[in-house]
Length: 244
Length: 390
Image (cartoon, rainbow over all chains, first blue to last red; front, top):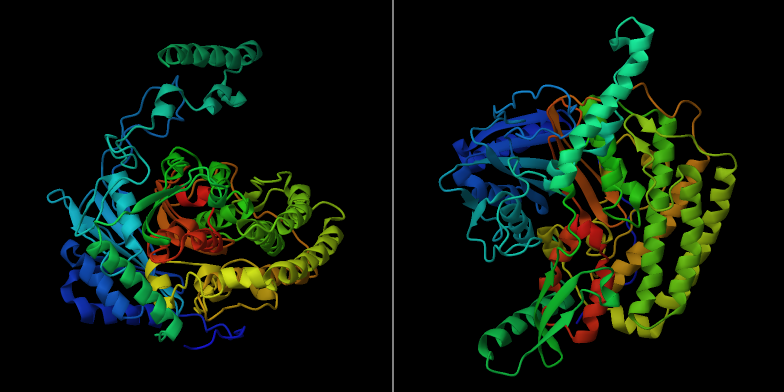
């Protein structure tokens, strides 16, 4: 058996900053490996790289990237592109409620479905990372598991399943990590309400005063108005307090 | 690709053997050992369920979630400047370091940069929170093996660093000091001199710990050759920080990526260790504390004059886009994937915390080890509960 090594130190010079050519090369290399399954890519020069692949090629992409040197698994999670129907709970309670936005707009590299899975892999030799995205169709609401490629994906997929409800084919054990087993709903979905915010509005709202120049020119009414606004919002809060 | 040493192959074989025993000898008298949620060796409320065969662990599973606070959901109902208050509490021993990557991600989307003075002060505070965090780890390490003295030293000397952080930011544990576009305040008078003196004390602390612990025969026999994690397994599980470097992977985000921070202005080293055992992980952290002292001392001499805040609007709206920024935090790679839709607050924030990945290797790492080694392996992996559960 080899003896335990002595203490060593490394004093490598930092590598030159990877440029566009590097990231374009990565995309070309991946296209050679997985073909048309690579739908779209986006390069932010000298900064970052995004790619989007077919849902069916999700695991194949991980294998291809791992073979291409992206051996470090950083994270895996989900995205819900539905705008929250509840807003941020910070709107002025006295104002007219605005019509909630329901249009689904995907981010960088686009997409076709409300839910997406995304993950990040890093090449530790070239010090370059890539964010991989894939659509999750409604039926079946699942993608292939990465656990056979990156063992660390196990917990991340469990968390994603728990928070978004996305299934992972071939995952050994999709138990909940945080929530009770009989918990209903998927907390990180946008249509899952944040109950504490529903019951009691953000306390910052109470302090909101209208800007002085918004009042009428008369000085007497300007001094009255903040009090009136405060009284009104306090009255709005009371029924909410009773519910809780 | 690294080749496996004999020692690493032996650890593979041991884990395979443990698997085989579990499959073949299910009829034997097994025992289930429950560690936590309140065991002192668990650094909080982590629970680990181990199935034992005699003195050997055949199966182990950490049970998380006793401290899940739902930060990813909460960020969606906060404005960008309010999020730092939340993320402060992820790794509570090195709070300032949690704020930095999020602020950098927001700045990246807004296409602004903090002025040079703010960048240097940010880096100094970042390294101070690393020293505060890791010095407690070094002291706590002894307690896991019954050595009481180091932890008192650690609490005493960490207090000097916390006083510095409190002096500069006003918050001992939760500074909430980083702002989009710079910092909240400039440094107080006399702070730089005081920091120099404290760095001398912290270097002494490292020397004492090295004598007391790392030179101790019991410590060595409990740590060397125990809990070996080969480099390829570490990468598969996404281990980061000192855990990854202790497996021989030369990767440090402070050096290997370009960020508007000041690490490249100082002369320092990235330490790695080829063994990948518990001892290597602790040793790399000890060296990193010294390097942090070195970085802080050098940067104190080169704080440029100028403003600490760039011009930002009073109400901050971050342009639509997606940004990923990660930094080398005390526990490892901490990153935020921020999606903005052009509103006052983020649309979605994925928080990649180091301990979540670092602890996901526990079922693999504990397979086949003896019961007393559970504690030292967990201690050397070094996790913080808030950083696992978020």
